[in-house]
Image (spheres, rainbow, N blue to C red):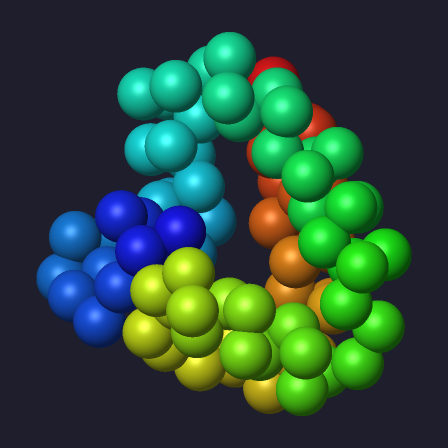
Length: 84
């Protein structure tokens, strides 16, 4: 996560979905596994505080734009699913 969603992300990509597209293009095999991984993370971390701690630990270094972490992760998973 830190490789794509870091503090300089917006210098490299227009938004988080452009960063996701770069990930899908660079590693389609791992990208196909991402929606299932997101589902597992959401199942194992039921609160926003747990999700925030986990994502910050993974290197997430920007705001999710006013949506919850659960909503944001679901949007990312849906975007990857549609792209693969």
